[in-house]
Image (cartoon, rainbow, N blue to C red; front, side, top):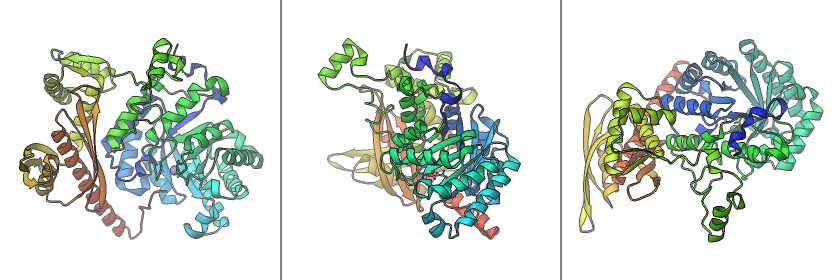
Length: 537
Ligand code: KIV
Ligand code: ZN
């Protein structure tokens, strides 16, 4: 029996570690990520399928777009607790409540820094005021919502006695979860353990609430520190899929979950996640955010279960456990089965998509079937990975303002590359542009800039193959800067130039949309003659 099959039916009560996913909040604070509401709802739906306990869906006060996305997730995703982040200001807490109140199980997460460095230089206040703000915030939040989480930001660089005082206030006012952030990724496992143990000594009531850990990866210790926190008594880990997040990112969800699962017999702790959904969740987040997963990434990297050396291959062929501590099936990395061929019909496609978790009907099914047929004409066998890629690609197409309509390119070693493109525009029209460049892709990119009449600077360009073989689909990720916005886009096709063009138009579309939203928000903020849109924590 594999580890996943032994799932956590037996893990209950105190041995169960809850997973608080912050991909859509802390994770989304990574530069260049520009998820729209539809993409956020898709990710949240997949997180619910994975079985996370809490989804931190956003920071509603920061923008109308964030508010709308948190509200949409609260209204459509069932299962996990849906949480909104708020500073201690009343306006933040009211916005967070407004966005999560329709969720099956809403939570407000409020925070204020307890380190002197933040209190003096960022908040420009004093410790007494911090205590007062924490008290008022939790008390107000508790009037609105039953489930309140409190975080003393930058706790690991703060005086532990003062942090304990603030946390005791939050508990007295009704916080049920106390989260101890290592905001700047500075602590070490031994130090974090000692800090949490001291908090337990200083606040006996901490035993009556859920202790949570939130670690950043600046020194590469986010998973190790989170694990130390769990061993010290924490029963909630805050983490993000693929470890995305501010700067070096957050604790990687898949790593902490598989660490708990794989070494469960040693420490007796586990989560209730359906780990076979880990790889798919990782692919979805990577696609939508434009943050690719390094091949050697633990658990979900392409090589995480690959054996190159002859000795290892020989060992695994004889007995898998000679060189493998986990089974690829337990994390869903075996999902590249051949599902359909050239003659498969609409029903077979619908069934296959349903098995992959996509409910596609009506016009969307017709479009998916058309794309599938086009692909099946080019590829002998269409795998589940291919289907996942083309359906995600269509979902993105439906949500973008600009889309590639067509392109022509001429290039070779004996001629200057020239390209002509048609881009469909938000008003339903089509704009045509022409351009040249160093190669066919460069020429297509400058033709797109001409069509959209926007200058942009290419920041990142990545191509990867989906599956194996000469006829594999190519997936391209583009990150660019336009109108002061860093934005990403992806495209999928058996033709790399087409995939690149799609990715470029989508990145540009995201950048323009982001710039327009920012302008609209600035107008709203001006009108309110206040600044309701703070920079993220
Ligand atoms: O890193 C941090 O301190 C945070 C808090 C808002 C929990 O993200
Ligand atoms: Zn954080």
